[in-house]
Length: 140
Image (cartoon, rainbow, N blue to C red; front, side, top):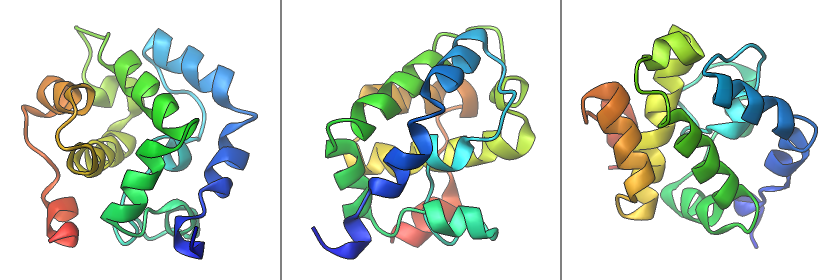
């Protein structure tokens, strides 16, 4: 695996937080800071050093993330938990800034997965089916 496809930093960041993140998503209220490594987005969208460190470099890296034995199923589980909240907005669950990151992440992984249902359902539910244009522009 080439260096850009090394996903270990996601595993290390997620490991101590998985139970808390799943509980927050089940409750429908994000309370702590974990967005970058549970719902990653393309590098170049965020400006902080953390956003750059956890930014996905390319569509190939997003595909590798989805194909990873731990990261792919975990991402799908987290998105599926978001999809259970019928009467809340993404902003109510995640906050306004992280709702934008969520949209970017969904757009990236919808593309990487060939429009897998879990990602499309979340885009439909929370964003009227509209993907993040900046993500699409970076992928073009």
